[in-house]
Amino acid sequence: MKTLSRRILLGLSMLATPVFGQGDRPVRVSLVKMPYVGERNVPDRSNGPDYLEQGGIQKILEESGCRTKPAAAVVLTAEEQKAYGEWHRLGLANGALARVVRDERREGYFPIGLLANCSALPGMLSGLQHSGATARPLRVGLVFIDAHGDFNTPETTLSGMLGGMPVAIAAGRCLTRLRLLSGLEPALPERHIVLGAVRDTDPLEQDLLDRSEIEHLSVADIRSRSDALEHQMKRLSSLTDVIYVHVDMDVLDPREVPGHPLTVAGGPTSLELGAALTEMFRYEKAVAFGVASTPWGERDREGVSRKAAYNLIQGVVKGLERRGTR
Picture (cartoon, rainbow, N blue to C red):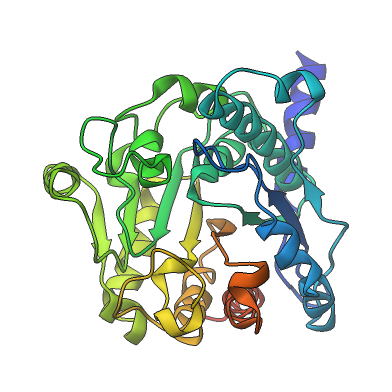
């Protein structure tokens, strides 16, 4: 029993290590690259996460005073890569992502996921869920900022895209095996989920959302950093142990993601969303961030989308630095 108690105390002391600046302590940030896509009839991996890293984000973070470490990358083993089925391999990759995120949190770092797409969501959530000092799963809150609801199921989807289902998967609405392979158990209660800036949903998807307990922030709430944003962060902080904030780049003004195939008019600029993220990450329970589906290569020839993603990350770090100054 004494040994167990010592282990618990050690785990608690690791989690107490601040990832944000306090006095002379720098913000401690770790970049986590998740390249696996999970869609059928397309390449298994995206170069988007490498593209974000190679643009110099680590240097930018260090020049702003952050303490960083070499980026971690999710890689399947040779045997796992042979596993049948894109969704199955994605589940294995999400499980690996979860272990990386868990370990970074336990070492006192703030994980920033550089994600191929939103299908990495269950892995990010799973890593946070199991990053506590004991075997008890932590209660995780989710702020999901996307032009789309991503709350489709195989029964409601019009496109068949797995990328339109990750919030539904995380909430336990569908694809249980993929969620369990990702390590996310239990599923998130719907009242622990907030959707931000959603403005394009399928009809049956919207019906599911209307009958769910999921709450919402509008584009106007994000642009103005309205009282609703503070209300939702306080509400999630009261219900959960940790909060994950996730952004799909298609949520932005299409002019900032010109190479993205799924943009929707009327989105916030990266500076507007970055300012809202600063407010969100002033809350102590906001412990990880992910940015997904950044256009890369020929689709971002001028580097506009990468710069927009960096604006979001810098907004997050400003929030971490300002904790305790409310």
